[in-house]
Every structure is written in C-alpha cells, then in structure tokens.
Image (cartoon, rainbow, N blue to C red):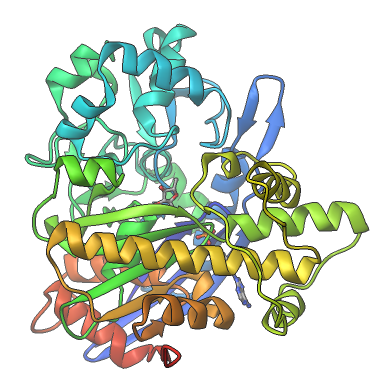
Length: 476
Ligand code: ADP
Ligand code: LRH
C-alpha cells in the first residue's frame, strides 16, 4: 500500500510544498507549489515576509489536499535560527532575517555575560553572529522579551498557526545555542545566566512526535479532513537533508548545498573539544539523536548575491546555466578567496566585496563575470575540502566519499571542483533531499515504512529511488 504525506520546505531562497508517496520499496515526490522567499527591508531592519510565506504554505497545502484526498500528515521544515515572539496568540512584530545587522550588538551583550568558549563547551555550537541566543540578546535590550510569553522558531510558528500547539522541535532548537546537546533539553542554567525568561521556551519534541491535528478553522480553509495531523520531522532543513543523504555505507561526508553549504559528517556523539572550537565546528542535532558535526560554509549565496548585483547593473535577468557554462570555459587561473569570511554575510554588492577582499591583500581580483563566478566556485570547493579534512581529523571518522544534496547538487562545475579539491568521489543529488527527509520521517512515524526503518534503511531507499550522479576526482 502506498500512503501520502505533505512536506513543507522553506529555504532562504524559495519554499515548496510537495506530496510524498511512500510504499514498499517506493518513494516518490510530486511538487505541488513553489514560491519565492523574498525578504523585506523596512525602517527597523531586514525581515522575513512571514505572512506571505504562510499564505503560500496554506495555498500549497490546499492544493495538496485537493490532489491527494488521502493525505495522512504534514511536516514542516525551514532554515534555522530565526523565530517569532508571541504574546498569547499575537505575534510581536515580524521575524527578523538572520542577515539583519542588529545581531552584532547581541554578540557583544551575550559575550559580556558568558564568554564564547564557555558557550561552546555547553552547546557545542559553532560561532555564527546570528545564532538565536545573540538575536535574543538584541531583543532583550529593546525590552521585547519582557512583552512575550513564547518564542517559536519558524517551522514551530507555522505548526502553531496550523494546529494551535506550541512546541520546539529539537533539531532546530539545537541551533539556538540554548540546548544542551548531551541531554537534548534546554540548558536552564545557561538560559538563566543569559537572563532569557525561561517561559519563552516551549517543550522540546523529537522528530516523529505528533504535534497535533489541524485547528478546525484551518482544516476548513484548506478543505482538509478533520484529524489531518502535523508531525514533527527534522524541522531544521539541514537535519532533513542529512537524513536523506543517499549513503549506502559508512564513511561519508555530506554537503547540503543551497543558500548555505553545510559541510560535515554524521556522528553518534558530539565532539566538543578545544580543537573543534578553534576550528569552529558545530554539533547540531540530527534525526534519531545523531549529531551533525559540520561547518556552515558560505554557500551559493555568494553567487546568487553576485547575480543580483549584475542584474541591477544590467537591468535584466541573468540565466544561471549560461553563467555557469561561461565559468566552466574559463581556462585562465583564477584566484581563490576565503568563502567563510564574515564580510560576505550581509546583503549588498557581492562582486565589489570580493574585489575588495583581494585588494586588501594586494592580490589581483578576478575580472569578468565568468571569472568571478569561477573564483566563487573554486573558493567554495577549496573551503569544502578543508572542512571535510578537518571533520575527519576532529571526529576520527575517515571519509571516503562526499555526498552533495540540495539545489547546488545541480551545479556540475562545483561538483567536479569539489571532487578535484577533495580528491574524493562526489555523489550528487537528490536536489530535493530536504523534502525527501521530511517525507520519510513523517512516513516512518506513521508506520508507513515496512520492515527495517533505521536511518540507514531510509537512506538506502533514497539511493535506490534517486540514483546520484558521480563525479570522479581528476588524476593528480
Ligand atoms: P535553499 O534551500 O537555501 O533555498 P536550494 O537547495 O533550493 O536552497 O538551492 C538553491 C541554489 O541552487 C541556488 O542558489 C542555485 O545556485 C542552485 N541551483 C538552482 N537551480 C540550479 C541549476 N539548474 N543549476 C545549477 N545550480 C542551480
Ligand atoms: C540552511 C540553514 C543552515 C543555517 C542557516 C541559517 O538553510 O538552515 O543550516 O545555519 O540556514
């Protein structure tokens, strides 16, 4: 028997609703709706257009219910770290975008109370200026935390609007900096030390937990059967993507490649050492209690933000496939920059910032758009190779193959450069790994996966149904 579930996957670049069909040796995804995710800058900073996203989600779910009346469950994932503050049912303001500049002040305020090395010892989380705890410190200075009774991360907020239940799904909660990776619960002592009101943090739940049925008014709006349930999945998009890596044996590294590149290995236990802190490796929560030991390497954001600038300059759209073909044809040596430099985080003129990065070091910058594109991709591949080497060294887990999943797995040049710079075979795809991980964890929670339903068995099913493309490293 084949059963259907719906995956809502909100990325920083775009969102989608997909129907997922899971049966005996069957896994099929059918796209239902796809919509852009365009942030909005207003007087107080950069925000997500959350109501427009919610409208797109409900419109997509209504289509999913129309197309598949037997729909059994809904799962929601999104990018990490961002949240809404609520007072009762009322949202206080519009969620900020993690690229909003106010986080710098939050870092200062937080580290005055608890220095980073202590934060790292407790949470195992890589330093990123926008981790939720820093954003909350900035809110606190503005008095916003006192007015709120709940903080909900983005997928938890959507689930709340759909079901009325307030929960903190654990994989995403692990990106707040307030979760204890050893217990999987909130680090109450740290929360108190930082002066964050404990009441803001809802009960953590694990992927597979049933969040609850749709509110009657929502079910009526969607045309959904009463009782259609929202199921917790790896609601951090990267957790769902890693769950769907089509690995068939141990010893793999993964690159979840989209707006960001998340590069690392999967572990059974966190690695929280001086060396992992110095290398800025994170221990995020994965599906089934696994640990995502990884680094956020600035991803295809570098390219999409460059394209946005070039489009502003030329007043028309630039086709990505043509740009990538031109970058592939570049034969001149292009210089490489540090893709992880924080100067590249904020929105704005990316090619100018890249040129400045080289000029500041007395180096010649790439010239044409094709060369800049090539330089971005070479720099990303260079950073991937470094991260994978460090992940293996720090964890003691050898790596013999690199899986690339997400939108960036379609970038053949980047995949080849990654194979060349790591010296390892690269297996690319699936593009929609996040939605697949979302679907599989729901399906399993509802007893729809026959036989072995371990993460390894789920991954083997992905490998059989979405065969990856192989890139072999060039001989050296
Ligand atoms: P997110 O989940 O962060 O929104 P995605 O996984 O959807 O990101 O990946 C988006 C990225 O995928 C884009 O920035 C783009 O670089 C890349 N991409 C999308 N389509 C293609 C394509 N046809 N060829 C190469 N790269 C692509
Ligand atoms: C990728 C992602 C990543 C986070 C970033 C904020 O979409 O969730 O794992 O670090 O967004």
